[in-house]
Length: 220
Image 1 (cartoon, rainbow, N blue to C red):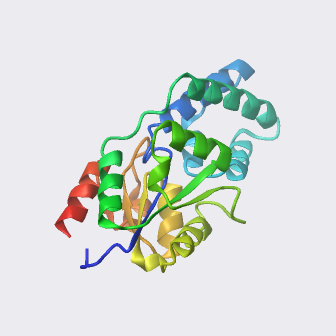
Image 2 (cartoon, rainbow, N blue to C red):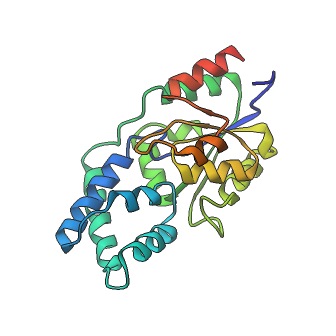
Image 3 (cartoon, one colour):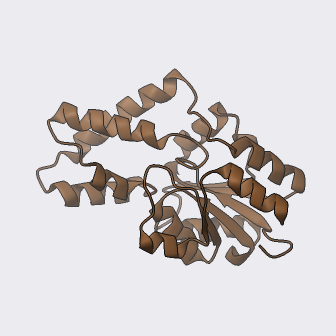
C-alpha cells in the first residue's frame, strides 16, 4: 500500500466484524423447515451481503411463485431476533485490535452494511463496537443496495474522502462488487463462501482474518 494510505476505512458488518452470518443461516434453515421447504444454501449464499429487498428477489426467483416468502421472512426474523436477544453476536478475531489501531492512528472509519439501522445499531452496541464508527450507512438508506456501489459511495462521502482514498473491508461477494465498483481499494476476508474467480479478480487482496489486515497496515 502506498504511504499515507488509507485515508479512511469502510467496514462491512455481518460476517466481517461480527460472526453473525452463521446465525442468520441457521435461522433461515429453521424457518424453511417449519414451512416445509428445503433450505437451498446455494441460493441463500447469493443473498449474503444483499439488503432485504434483494434477498426477497433472489429467493423468490429461485424457489418460484408458490414460495411463501412473506411467511418465511417473519419466521426467519423471529428466530434470528430470538438468538440476538440471548447474547451479543461474537466479534470476529482481530476486529477490536484493528479498530483500536485505526482509532489511535486517527484514521476515520465508516460502516456500510445491508442490515437495517435498528438492528445494526443494536448489534454494534451489544458487541461494544459502536464507538469506533463516525458514520454508518445502513440497509434501506440508499436507493440501491449492494452489489451496487451506492453504499460505499455514500460512506466515502460521509468521511469526506474519495473512494480511492478508502480501504474497504468485506467478506461477501456482493460487498466486494459494491466496494470495487465504487472505486475503493478492497480487501476481502471471506466468511461462509469461498470467493470464485470473478470475485477474486475484483478484490485487491484476499486474507484469512482481520488480524492479517492489521499486520498489513502496520507495515505501511
